[in-house]
Image (cartoon, rainbow, N blue to C red; front, side, top):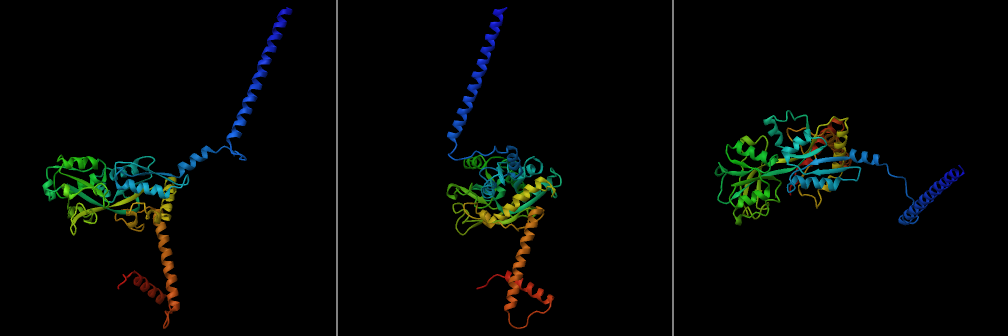
Length: 392
């Protein structure tokens, strides 16, 4: 019995010793870790409290908008990259440009795809979907923020083709499926009653097949000068074909002209090529005004208006310099927040002109207007006078 008691006592001592050793080792590790952290941290610095990661995630998600653009080589991608470069403001506002199939698919994405806030398209896409009816009534579903520029139709062929009629029955590239160019090309050849065989290739493949005779022509819609077309040369057998502003196309297109200045290697000096154009549009879904999605778009619009002059400076795409925030788009409804900002700017402009007018009246000699009606009439005359072109 005494032997058993001695064994139990010895076992307890061993366990106690092991526990003490573990405690000492644990304290030693903690001390070494603290010393290492002090060695890494800058001298005199105080490590603050751990960040609130949940709050950070909520702020990032609340102020980030996804923007569908287009093919990497097309103008919509350049516009999207410009917006991100100018408007991104850390976690306070962030634009995520996303490569897409182009103008037609962008309307579908903004209309139906979760997580998509904004997109670029072309103005004639509304007419296309109105005719097909495949997306239902879009009039109250989509709103435009601004018109950016006109995108000209470029119909490139070989030098032996001199008219659209010569393309009848031949292979013509309409660009990738879902692109604005595909829709526009279909409008043109259907409207002009010219049957061609549609193929769907990207610009690089299209120019390669055009060079070796596999296709007869390729269509591209882009603001002029288009980077994809600029390297082509008439001396190498390329030609830009005219596209008539025919009656079936007038509801959705505008007349335009390509010049030698636009494409010095394709169009001879002093010559022009008539074509048609549609407008590039920045648009959004028409969210209810009290919704979080409306708030995001409205925040984007306020930043866009505030920094618009930055977009018009190099190295941003030169088309921004021709853009006008107040330009209207027939057949489209403008985003309400943008309309409110424009109304405010117009009021400020009129107020500033009124102040100039009052100063003008105060310095004037002779008979002054006495009634409010006379002052208003003279002010209207003053406004009209300011809008007259200067003659020299």
